[in-house]
Length: 364
Ligand SMILES: *Cc1c(COP(=O)(O)O)cnc(C)c1O
Image: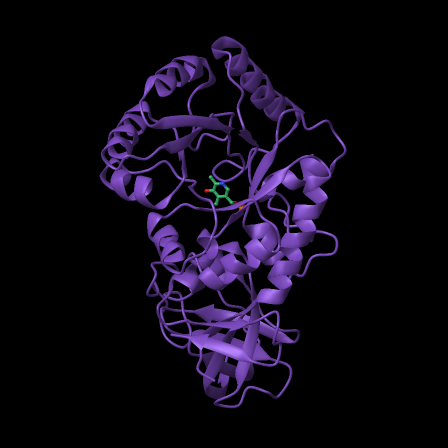
């Protein structure tokens, strides 16, 4: 089979998603399945829908358009604030978008009117992580104008923590989101359908047994795909952590010294790697590199160690004698490695379907 490739076990992803959907349902929380880390793959999206997610969310309109054109029957949300220049595409392909700028909501209103459609918005509130969000003091004014715009429906509020600064969801910031929800409902005499509390970093808080207040939705990507929560990367009980693996092929295998010869300066990426001399050891080169994957986010098989990497080469050593040319090696990926591998056109995406485990379907 061709390499390098990402192997995606749809059955395991479906199991992970269903487990989280069921556990969160007990706490009154729905799941939006986030597809950006797998580049809006319709195969994965389909598995998420079979598992009972409430809808799909992606940060890139291109991914949503790809899922639309494969005729997935699902509600789709753009979970990054739309670019003004993409407002028309957003109204065309999504039911909902997450917003932080009233100027963008005005444009969405205009485009929705032209297309004779209604577009729903979730307003994102800044609660400490300092990525996207309306400052809480400005929220009432933004809601007031949003409610006045034709062809726009205010669907709810949301927030995003942990991604930029690592701020943990807790009773304080989640409590603030619940209180803001009640303030908006009381001020405008409306009821908000969605209060979206965050991402895979919220799971510890939700399952910690505390009162979850008005939070009734989470947007989950990493926890479904990799089986880990996103604050400490702890494995979530009962979830598969090996639903996705990266396979690369050995193109060189030799005994080589660990110590470079000659005067040392910057390498291709402007850094000066330090090496400890371990004498001469078996070393292999795999045909994959920094262009295809975040090498720091790879976990090699037992007995194998990553020694270094450059654009197109990954250098490893192994205690086992399986480093022959043409052999394949499988790695586990973290979120960053997964994002980049899925985005590299050089990495084949290969799906193991839930129904037919023995058959691997390849797409270019
Ligand atoms: C990426 C993203 C998510 C999903 O995050 P995970 O940690 O993968 O669960 C949720 N919300 C927003 C706004 C995002 O950009």
